[in-house]
Length: 487
Image 1 (tube, rainbow, N blue to C red):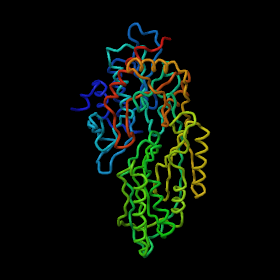
Image 2 (cartoon, one colour):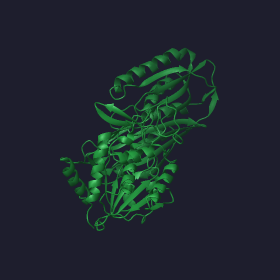
Image 3 (cartoon, rainbow, N blue to C red):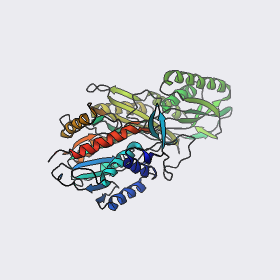
Image 4 (cartoon, helix red, strand yellow):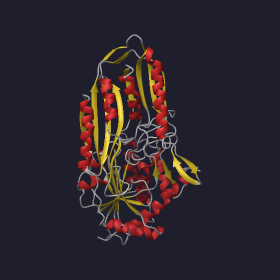
């Protein structure tokens, strides 16, 4: 049995076709071409804008011409994350989906990589609506955006006036039975430390320190779960080694995406021979402490030290200043919302620490549903790194999406969900960034909502989708299209 045999088969068929096309963020050109051809082969009006966003229009079915136009929106790109032991080139290789039974229920995973159900399943549902001949609906537009995961550049660059619809249904949220009416905004912080190198001092031995086995995950969806951050753990180790045991940093690399909680970090350190035993004892102690602190959420964490080689080390005290600032930098949840229960209001993901070519880069992604609180957090982060001598820049800021509890499409979708499934849909806001906030700025007349199937651990190789939720979600979307509000 393959995923193409799952229900609803036509949605899973389209999703499978997307898993076979490489589409990491900023390199989703093959998938853009595929979707453009898909629309044209259906004989539908198909537009590719200057960035690579795809718009496909489908006329209303007979008798539905007087309904408001619905825009089904999903992003094309996916987060490229894999396990260390998995050989996979995200620019060339297809994803390998598999069905896994858990407690008698079917889940779809990839094999050692992210699955790309975020947001490949949203794309697949929109594709299925476009090609279906048995659905009842008003005017439909499908909007497929590029590069959502690393900058939302597709949404940012979408021109006003291209789309004609009245209602945006974003297909990128991750719990079936929940309707999202608000999301967090974001802001990127980058701190840069400059360093010079010197020859490895006599009397020093080089070792590699590794932090691995953490679950990682989505820096919006799972930032409140207490998952380990490999960069923060590495800084905890290095602080004592550099400050107290007179070690010297050779290089460091942790994390690779701003919106993914870092799962692994590596650093090479030169240790005075007389302090090697103490350094090993410290690494072992931190490992025991971290296991005790986070084993419930991160049971597979590993921390160890092994011999390595190097000819040069970072000169001066730049490395120690960097480590101190990483230790001081706020990470994870900064503040919970006072307006909505269990909603994270403001957070930071200390996502990347990397040395190369005489510079150490530290990169963070802040999220916040209140712009002023997000900016206040950014000043705390700026202060921590500037006090350590780094040059700090803030880029890529975007506002959140403010909830509209009087939304007509919210009222319609709540009623339909209750009719279909005999229970109320939950109305939620999300701490992750959705494109709705940006798109709503360009098209302020739109009534907007977001929904999706049940996904777990997006942005990590543990990403998976609950199969029964896809069928429920599909039937819900079909019913919403058939009952779209009149103009």
